[in-house]
Image (cartoon, rainbow over all chains, first blue to last red; front, side, top):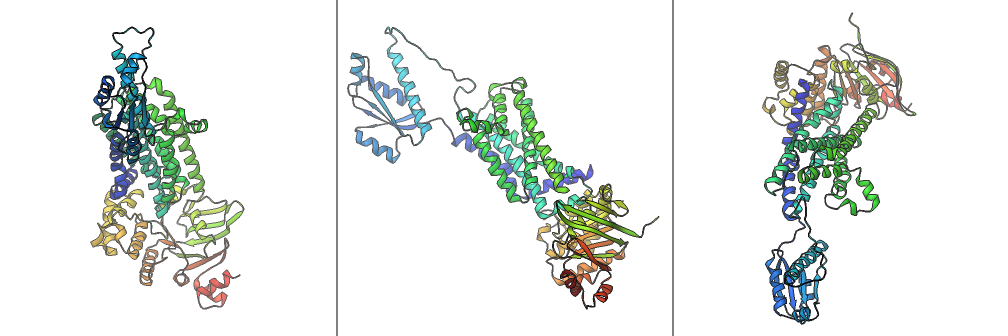
Length: 367
Length: 242
């Protein structure tokens, strides 16, 4: 036991004396969470929108005012069709709202008036959002002026966004970033630190010494479990206090599931280290084989249900997919273990599988 | 009853698939002997050594190290041997003292023992001024001497040295061999593989491996006599060329 403690201590020396690994360990989580939280967002805020008003009557002015009054858009007027193209190319506006001539008069006379929204779709998400926000504003205006009139039939859709009523993008990113960081720290850092021992020849010395191989592996992994738990805590604190993300479910369950995922990632890291002889290979495998699929296929940026079927199938073997479901469930929906026991079981199964394969590989190497 | 031999090997064989890396080798190494294990790259000397130090299982044959069977008693063997590889594997990002502490620790030495040994070792090697510097800042020769001393920290009965003097300057090599002699005089058996044929002359006995088999085994002077040459280098060339 004492030799084991000495081993873990040595591992901490390695970590704290290497600036690069220190940065990855503690700088990355904070930088990433802040980046994803503030910079990368699907919401729109003060988007520059031009109004081309061929009618310029009371109705169009009222609608323009409503649009301007929302926080989503900042309005500027333009006077001719020719200016549209120029403004788009310069990038000074993202959309143009065009009122047809006699807009107000048409609306009263024929009960029908036309308004066109032209958007710059080089950013499809923004374009979509602009269209739907504008539609919503106009629809609201319409129901306002219809208040005192009798309409034969009307269907009112009232939508309510549950779990994230303000549609905050950060609610979506926090679980994802947490997943990526735990994966990165646990899998990449451990696989690198184990292969480093192989590369420098110290692993051989350890194998010749009385310390048992599994003690070596566990000893290398323990510091990363600690550090990953600290990381997870920092991320949760940041998301709760900086981004006002709720934790609806049990904190204990959240902690338990996070530790489970940390162990899954560590198991993966150990597996990677048995497959690679050098630190560089380990890093490449971790980055290409783990990070990319984690980012792309875990469903944290791109919804899995809209992927082609083969990718949907592949996404099932990505541990991150299950963990994202789990933390979204706990943090946003407040679910209990009864709801996510299946995902939890899958993660446990994967962990055991990775460990078994690693042990097998490790033995072959020793033969 | 004290056995005269600390390593006894009989018909030891290691196959990787169809490839026979070590082919029925037989030899004995006595207590306090400096035993040179020579051979070209790929001749199988590292594989043979790995079986003796317990990190590779033999395919067939018998072998005991300090009287312990290499099939079943690898853990006990590990406590009784020291090992130093050609990579001078200390931790670069730990200080001299931390390295000593660490390796003393994994060999299960008591804290007090480690402390005493550290002091002796540091003063013997003249490392007082760098005891708290990182190992990566030491010159290669120092690292290697330190590495050797660390491998001896737990007073092993046998020390295995895998090409310990690769890439070191002649003066350091000489000093290194002085350390080896001193160790052997204190009763520790030294099992050393090397490329340098002049080093072979320093050994009490040498074995020369070619293609997995031991082709010659005797004292350097007997070998030179029986091959009718002046140096170990010539003995080796004669053997290697068949």
